[in-house]
Length: 292
Image 1 (cartoon, rainbow, N blue to C red):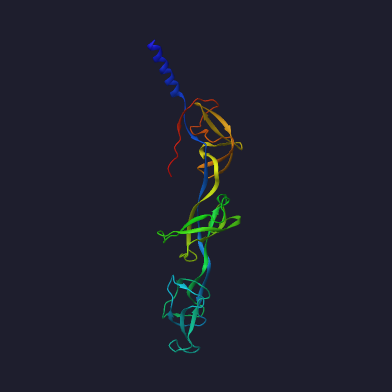
Image 2 (image 1 turned 120 degrees about the vertical axis):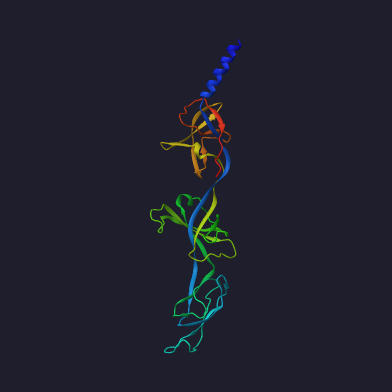
């Protein structure tokens, strides 16, 4: 009798070992977000200010990064009168700020001799800078005005700026500066901080997470099989698997929204789907998401 029991146990163990192992996850309701990263540059209303005559700069009253008020005097020159040397004094000329803003670049120093129209300093209008970024068209469909992003730039790695989307282009076009690039959407973002210290023209990188579904039924994206325009999952229940057709929605490449075909709490196969058939007996273990 003992021998019969032992043989039965060995048979059960062999059958269990012969069953394929699958990793399963539970369909659950959760908010889904999409991580977006893109490149762009700082743009804005900026002016290179100059004198209307040639001469020697005697004073520059501002420093890079200084705030300037409209009509504030920023620089002074002693012009070179027609037919006279620079050492002879004529009527002084000044550069005044045409609007409120920040001095971002000073091209010349006191004592420098400049020609008429030669740039002396650059002024960026207050509130007149923004970031223009190019975002993949598939990602851009989830963008909304007000979405939050973080901005960083080379040379300023210890500093990050908070931005919000203020406008989204209506057309997806290839980037002119990257031949062969995917179609992208031009997006404008502005800082939410009092001062945005990056000069116009600075290349930047932005990143953020945007919501794409609120409290939706989700499963890991790897659980979904696509074939002949049909999407399905392998449902696991009572030690066996069966195919289940589903209709899917948005995805963030890690998880996918299930619109029809599953209920919260049902389990699906994520790993080990090869060679499964309807009714296959399996050994199930919990699927563990890889750490990013």
